[in-house]
Length: 414
View (cartoon, rainbow, N blue to C red):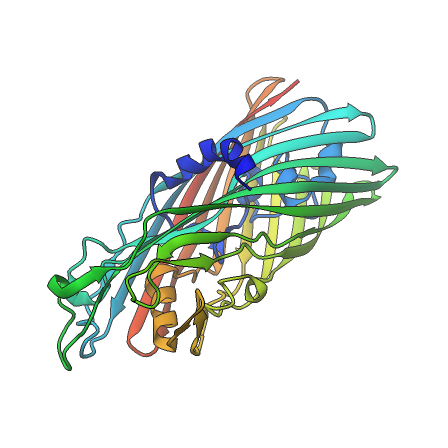
């Protein structure tokens, strides 16, 4: 898939500016566009501007004229972890991840080909997570761990309407970058703490891969103001070469870590007389069937999103929403499994999930606004807050995260 490298790498490299842990369902963003994020991540049952290119391409055809949007999301996670107290593990002191800020850009565009046919294209940062404990005292048992997964998609889509029925389809040309780094001692005497002087770094640096997937969406105008929608995204296979020495034999190993398939349905209602819109989405994310996530024993997620908007004036619209999905790592009892083709003890799986990929976020409270600066230019703003969630595993591993994010988009229409 190197042929799409130049197309995706410009935006992909910008995703590597810092490690992060998104305000997410698992490691997927609750919504990629500012309007969607302000309304709890909805977008299956209603159109959410040019970002429908990603969530449900069926709605692209409902947009009028030439549309373009340029936006970015700033993530500000607060992630902490502790190990022990236990002999040979850690002293039970809490460490704080330094991966506390990152910016992800989005670009999207749509236009009509004819009255019934439209196209759209977008570049979105859609998934990511990571931690950074390199500055913490080694006696805390955090292994100097640093992880970063960045995932973006270039999505060309097309949308067609027949009376009240809409259908859309598109490709997802994906770029992923994974970095896992930690030190592990060759031997730890019984009852003693790991000694950094005898430890070896087990990380091969940033590894990149590309993948291709597809998505289809349906939409239906049931009656004036009411819409129904459904969509499906395929799994995208990616494999990261020489990313980490999982079996500590001195050779960096490859890891298959594919983005999961996803399906959803939604309903929306808009009242133009009173100026309000409300929408509800249900989505299912199939983590347990995705390469890599199955080995790390992530559960599938049921995502529930509700959002609404109200037109205060002809230029100002207020938005709010709520998104909930039980963490794929909630209340887990881990079992031994094969990771990267090697036997991996249950404790190691729990350790990597807890310190490296603590995808514990469940609730998201969202708000935002849209303002029309002129007949051709508009501005969107969104704020997402994910309350603190703490999980304990194997009795001696604990991690928590609390997240906030701000998104802004500038829109143009001609």
